[in-house]
Amino acid sequence: MANSELYIGLMSGTSADGVDLALVDFASGKPVLVATSFTPFDQIISQHIQQLYQPASNEIDQAFSLSKELANYFANAVNSFLSQQQLSAADIIAIGNHGQTIRHRPASTEQPFPFTLQIGCNQTLACLTGIKVIGDFRQKDIALGGQGAPLVPPFHRMLLASQSDDNFVVNIGGIANITFLPKDKDKPITGFDTGPGNCLLDSWFQRHHSDKTMDEDGLWASSGNVIEPLLQNMLNDAYFSQSLPKSTGREVFNLSWLTSYSENSSAAAQDIQATLSALTAKTIADDIIKLSDSGKVYVCGGGVHNKLLMAQLQSYLAKFSVLNINSLGIDGDSLEAMAFAWLAYAYTHQQPSNLPSVTGASKATTLGALFLP
Image (cartoon, rainbow, N blue to C red):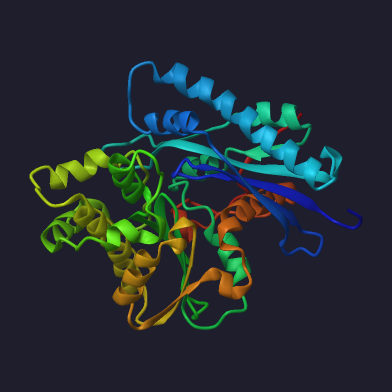
């Protein structure tokens, strides 16, 4: 493509359902989405990823073998996509690879030496595609005292720079996170993980529906009723009142966590599903209300397709407009993959790509590391 500056972003989230790919053109200095694809994981790979969310025996062998397998999976997705788009490796400046997070341990009193681990070997990916890969984006932010997450708020700032009002971008993936873009430019941009997004919903649903992976449109949850005592009990979890900056993952919010709150419950399974949906919506809404009393809330990620969850979120945010980010002409399903294309672009141009006000890092810096084919 003549006069283009093409980057590919790859994103595999905590839902472990597959890899999103976004082809983005930065010729104008601003991101222009050219094309996208989604390559689902087969059930075995998804299970292997989710097994690594918790410590277990022989996990080093399992993790690093899976890292190579995922790199091959990612490379096949990239090479097939390029063939479909009639592009070659030489047309792409770099791939921004988030990788698959299997463990995220930010600093805490229990974790004096914080770390984060994303697999999907960047070096293997570079060699199999013949394209430079920028990866390991979280490491430097953690080295500078930050949480290493979330990484997408600087990209949100770019996309919504012309917006007025207090604006929020809510990404509901396996874990939910928000970016707060205040209309008062003297206020800092804030971003953090609010807690569970779809992770508990998916895991509880899969326990009761072996033939499906998710509760489409929240229909099963809609057949149940919210258990208010259980909801209030879960809301007392220390994470929800933890001060900023903060980030979390599925190694915290999983079925073992749910069992710790519901093991003596005799409630119907669909009532617990309805309660988990309310938990996701309420924790997002509570954090938004702490930051502003009105504004626009743009939602993206898989959760935006859950009708019940969106209705619950709007009910908790009566003074806010809750909108699908697609209403801005932004493809919400590709937003995070686009962000990692931008992170690769920022690395290539040595532009700062973290936000200390979000992660708590000691300074702004260019994130990522380069892997040559």
